[in-house]
Length: 105
Image (cartoon, rainbow, N blue to C red; front, top):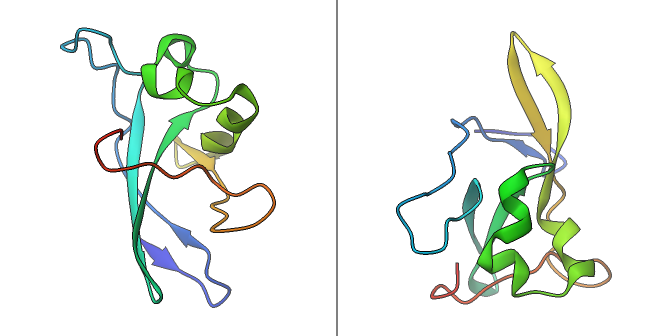
């Protein structure tokens, strides 16, 4: 994790696979919990744009279609053979990122 002066950050992780062990398989996703001054915490899930499994993921299907794109990490090139993705997390206001109850995510 690297943070810049303007609040941007990078996170390095291994892309998860489809969770086939569940009754309804989940698309590859990353659960993100944010702690900040003035809020207890918020939880969301980030998905990889273009994944076939996104079409049947129960969490994505549970929210309005126009909100789903706000949870998609978009391809952002490669660096040293490693795929990069980008997403903007918006905490409040227009185009706010959907946040979930812990039990749903």
